Image 1 (cartoon, rainbow, N blue to C red):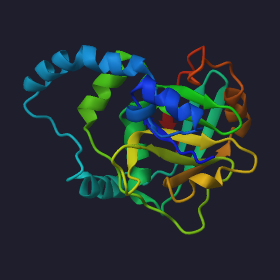
Image 2 (tube, rainbow, N blue to C red):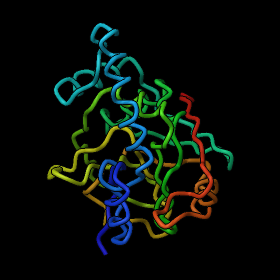
Image 3 (cartoon, one colour):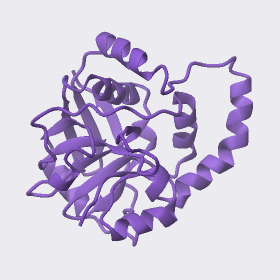
Image 4 (spheres, rainbow, N blue to C red):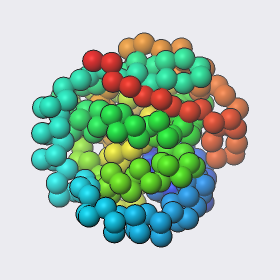
Length: 237
C-alpha cells in the first residue's frame, strides 16, 4: 500500500494517514496537541513579534540564498541525536546542500531540543521533530514558514538507516520538504515506495540499534509513543 511521510498538525488527518501507512508531515497528519499549542500561543506570539522590530524569518522567497550562504559558513556533516535509549549519529550528504544546511541550522538553533520522536510506525520508520510543547510552537514561528524544494540524488534510495525530511501532503505536487520534521527508515528491506517522494539527506552511521529500540516502544492508536521520547541534538563535526 502506498505510503509517505507527512507533516504533523491535525490528528484527524493523521489517523486517516495511519490507516494508509502514510508518513507525511504533521500539518496534515498528526497530533491535535501541537495544533492546540500553536493556537493557544498565536496571540502571544504576534504581540511578541510586534515588539521584536521585524526579526529575520526564513520564507520560500529567501530560503535558497539563505541556506546556500549558511551552508558555506557551516559545512558540518555529522549530527548526534541524544535520547534516553542512546545516541544516533547521522552523516549528512553534501549532495543535498539545502537540506543539509537546514538540518544543521535547526540543530544549532536548538529547535530539536524542544521535540520528540513523536511517531513510531513499527517495522517502517521512526519520525521526529515535533511535540506538544509550547516552546516548539514558538520556535517554529520564530524561524519562519517555508518548505524546501526537492534535492533528489540519483542512486539514493530509502534503504534501512536512510534519513529524510517529511513533506506536506496537501497542495504539494512538487513534493517540497517540511523543514522541521524528519524520519529514519527502520524497515530491514527499506521503504522503496517512498523513493522519489522525499529528499534523502543523510544516513545513520552509528546507533541503528537505538533507532530499533525506539521503534519497539508502546504507542497509542495514532502511533504516538505512550511515553515521550525527548531529543537533544548536537553538531559533532
